[in-house]
Image (tube, rainbow, N blue to C red):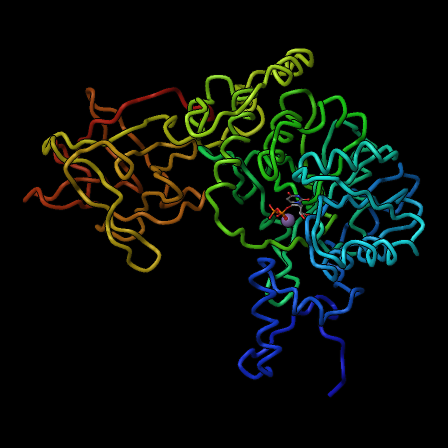
Length: 508
Ligand code: UDP
Ligand code: MN
């Protein structure tokens, strides 16, 4: 067998911890507790490692023009592990034509780890393009990124988390698109670095490309698939894809556009909300946000240890974003009224929005992403009450069976498990689950798949009542009035429901 460095070509390293000497097993365990990822494993993988070339076929010939603007890469970190941070820096230098990188600016957000002090300074001093700034006190990721941005000078800025690895040819496609249109913010096709084995997990390309979309009420992002409109509009699989939202870990933006948009809201604390703020404002203020399929970067998604303090701070951050940008839709977000946490003064941000003459949020819903799901603002919304058994409602609180959840007929209380929305894709949805007609006469819910099919429902209006119909079958109550059933549609109040119509569909 050939001896190979661990981690080569994006492979991971799995250790059987029970076979490690006691001391080493302890170190392994401690590393997981300290960092929310296995720095122990990372230390065993070289700082420089190759990654496979995952570019789509058409990419190589598309990006040969290299007379592009220079880029400043801004990497902020708070106690990132030495090996993870340096692997990020090396992967940039090893996978980018040198003339495109003006500088790599590291911003230490008040790390306490000793090795990130002088030893780091000494290590990076050998690279003429790398600068190291230190925040005097903890700034949080939003203000730390802006510190780096203020120091940077190139016409394009890339903000990158301190735990990423770049694939060959990652930068050129991002910058090429910005050179064509400077108000487009670009992000790569993101892949994953496994937080325990450091294996690079290639994620979908082509049809399976993941598209971040906004979620309510927390203004976080979730992965979705390309909308039908977007799929039809694109000609080649290498074409940019319009993205309603972003993850935030790798972003390329022109200096002038980022400045014009008022950078990030400096009132956002520590972590979160800045990706949503930037996504919404680039779309509403005349620009856009695109995923460039030929650019590939892997980001290490690591679990965040839950803490009440972080949770409250996050809710405070999103209440700022929501109150500045969402108009009447702010009512569908957490903490919009400041009842969980005071969100501070936002008058500067509102003045900025006014001075830029940005579109109302409605524009986002009609022109950017009509599929946007806002719980509580469906086409039909609220409890779904049976006409014959009028004290009973559809209830999602049934037990789990494999990947599906049974739906109950239950006394109406109109709370959580009885709040349903009809979405633009004609899903009957609560949380992340959708009513699904796949299982014959059993009425179940499954994870929403966005593929219509068994999750597409026609809400047929009938003298003030509605029928819930999918694939020609209707949701009804059994004759003994005890359970739900999916059956042939017939003319009976057992199949009729009352459900509040809330608004017109945005798309047909
Ligand atoms: N970070 C920072 N200061 C903070 C919190 C985070 O500099 O107070 C850095 C962190 O080291 C990372 C980036 O901000 O480089 C994004 O944070 P994280 O990766 O935890 O966010 P995620 O990608 O998990 O959403
Ligand atoms: Mn990250």
